[in-house]
Amino acid sequence: MISIMLAGLFGLGIALLGTPVAIKAFRRRGWGQLIREEGPKAHYEKRGTPTMGGLVILAGAIGGYFFGHIGSEGFLPLRDSGLLAMGAIVAFAGLGFADDFIKIRMSRSLGLQRRAKFIGQAGIAAVFGVLAVEVVGVGTDISFFRSTALDLGVIFFLWVFLMIAASSNGVNLTDGLDGLAVGSAAQVLAAFVVVAFWQFRHQGFYDISETGSDPFELAVVAAALFGACAGFLWWNTAPAKVFMGDTGSLMLGGAMAVLAILLNTQLLLVVMGGLYVVETLSVIVQVAVFRRTGKRVFLMAPIHHHFELTGWPEFTVIVRFWVLSGLSVAFGLGLFYADFLSKGGLR
Image (cartoon, rainbow, N blue to C red):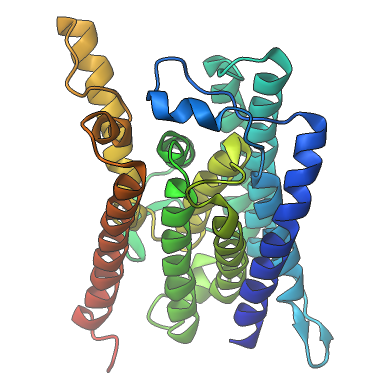
């Protein structure tokens, strides 16, 4: 438990204290945010706000992860599942950084082409999927609260890609208002700390010896990320002093999918990440209906911009969407615990 707390505290401290330093450095390099021309007019004043703050979240996550392994008897060994999760997180941050860097270098609101981003996500998913199965020992079955008997076989690797792409792009779409994405991500990551620690305390119930992953190690990873998000949120709340950019959004979304896969809670992520599901569906519906009828369902997609254009103040949209995210997380944790009770977990 102390390791988890250390990871969270150091992740928080690094992001909280490191973000102002990063803001100054980003301004010197001209790493400013570019705004969509078709977006709400109120967002134009945000143009030039330092971006790529996801690098600070990454630094906090890495620092928190390693500090979380400091024990009374020295440095604790790093486990395969934790190293794989951190490696994937770094890879997603790298993909997002490339996207952000192209935007700044080319002075446009669009970075990597869709095909390039798709290939990047597919490559990360492929490497992660193979290592998760062959090195960590994760099963190829589909999971909700824990492993099931539904073995996907080779299709599992396609499922891994779909989860990673959906989660990373979902958070990326949500990252359009100050603090909305990182605030909701902190809630989901905090829930993964609870889930992972609960699995660690009830290893027999969750067949940890057979599923391969080390839940305590993953709790440290989730705690480090949660702390880093909380520290960054201090500077990212409205009016934001810095944005995390795709460097942060792709990384956080990818991290959620990675944790869900390694903890055998794949479908539970759909529930806890309900906000991202709503945001993504709003874009899918908007595009599909417009292509078919030429009409728009929403004033603008993702849906948080729709509510802005109807007259809701930005901060009102943010807080209400945080509430939606919190309810999704609470409902997901409730289902997770209900499954534990229904299967005789307390016997």
